[in-house]
Length: 136
Image (cartoon, rainbow, N blue to C red; front, top):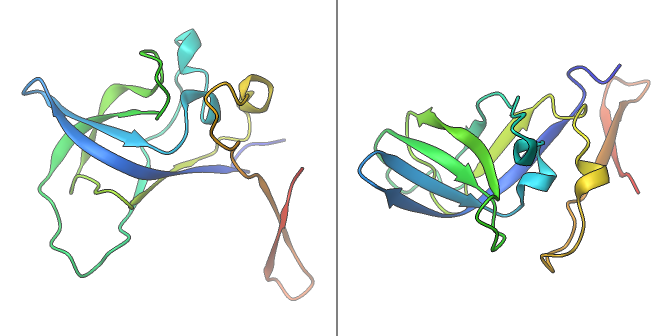
């Protein structure tokens, strides 16, 4: 029922090299907002990388883990290296598809004192145009 019915969008905060192996991309959001990586059940596909500033030179290719912005060591969104044709830069967006089946709404809370992610509902109107509304 929820197959292919949601996306999760994360804005990149910073990118740091890590141990000569790859990088860590820190995003606005937590692992609670994406999947159940805390329970070793990561099923996320590789994210779509959306560049926010087309005028700056693109960065080089690289591999990276994606981490949330909380203070918790286990706030890891991907436990595997993701290959990027161009490493994301702060402000870029990472979009994960097909995330409606995760139970992040049950796990998400405000312990981190950051706003909870906004949820939107999309429906197609009679003119075949998408209409977005905030889903409370």
